Amino acid sequence: MSTAEASDSAWKAANSSTFINVVMPNLRNLMPRTLDGQITMEKTPSYFVTPEAPRRIYNMSKDTKLIVVVRNPVTRAISDYTQTLSKTPSLPTFQALAFKNTSVGTIDTTWSAIRIGIYAKHLENWLQYFPLSKFLFVSGERLVSDPAGEMGRVQDFLGLKRVITDKHFYFNKTKGFPCLKKPEGRGKPRCLGKSKGRPHPEIDKTLLLRLQEFYRPYNMKFYQMTGHNFGWD
Ligand SMILES: Nc1ncnc2c1ncn2[C@@H]1O[C@H](COP(=O)(O)OS(=O)(=O)O)[C@@H](OP(=O)(O)O)[C@H]1O
Image (tube, rainbow, N blue to C red):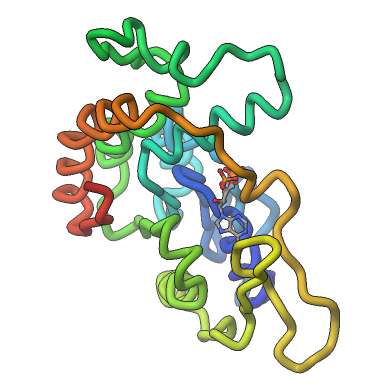
């Protein structure tokens, strides 16, 4: 995979708790053979929240670099719900799924859209196998507001030359998101597909505040663990 392909692949994995697994050269593993000068990347959103994943990846290669894209867990939950709703239009409302009891505000932590956003808990599991230095946490919010900046961090983390820069992005007003372009003027600009950046349903403000409150201690713990304040609170 070239530098540009690696960066492009990381950029496409845009959402929160998307997980990218990067295998460095000359390691025996179950991924495609990686030659000198190449890196192999694999992206599976559910790795980060799968209890068996850290042990399995560690056993495959303890030198694997891990990239996690995280965004505000409240927005993440709504995005997750929006995605499911697009496939299952008969789905109950967001609030019916997120709250066991809306009047007292008890949150249903067994619902995956809620559980996935408890990043500190998932990270604890990973840190039993991999040191923090093996991780890069990419801000889902900054990936939208400053895609080149976040991609700069990704390229540095992977030890790649900074090939993807500001010149490769432009803001597409229709899409409402940054899209990719070839700075040399060759090739068509390319936005992410229709399933990325969909409008979210409107959720009652009180319920949103309750959810924000629920995540706050976990977010604080996550900031502390990663040494990075993502600014969600
Ligand atoms: N440039 C650009 N264009 C479009 N969308 C962007 C972009 N950067 C980040 N995002 C955010 O990515 C969110 C979708 O990611 P997914 O959750 O589907 O990714 S993944 O399947 O987990 O890889 C998607 O979430 P939703 O807005 O809820 O659709 C976007 O907010």
